[in-house]
Amino acid sequence: MLKQRGFQVLALVSLIFVAACGEVEDTRPGQPVKTRQEAFKEIIRSFEPMGVMLREKRYEEDRFLNLATRLVERRDAPWAHFGPDTNYPPTKATERVWQEPERFIAEKEKFLAATDALLAAARSKDKTAVEKTYQAVYDSCQSCHKPFKAR
View 1 (cartoon, rainbow, N blue to C red):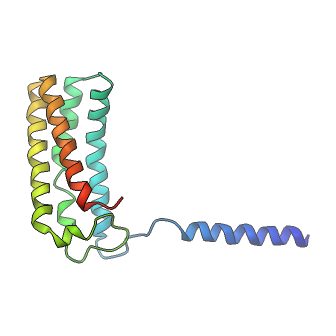
View 2 (view 1 turned 45 degrees about the vertical axis):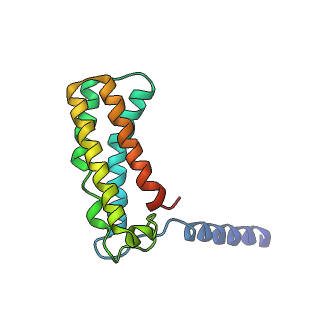
View 3 (view 1 turned 180 degrees about the horizontal axis):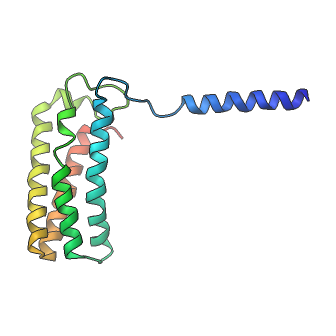
């Protein structure tokens, strides 16, 4: 009985410890960090299926166009949530977002231009143009993530 009770206490302490090690929650008013993270996830939910389609050689013109349209509709959502007081956990942004705001804005503008070109290519239904512009959007994401997103 005493052994069983000790095991139960150990199990309870372990569960509490595991729960305490979870992701930090954004508790600030308006939850700007959580909001921008969710906005980026929405962008990925539109963008990644396009990449899968192209990598697996299963290009569907209309579906791709729908995804590209959805991407453009969602692309502006995260940027307003990078305010000066939003550099706190659970952010994955690096200090450079706030130290190099001109470069950060330039990367954002490259992303917006690349997504415009992707949507135009999707509307044309020219697979070669779609592949090229998809890669440009991907490259834009990577060129921003390298300096501005913690791994």
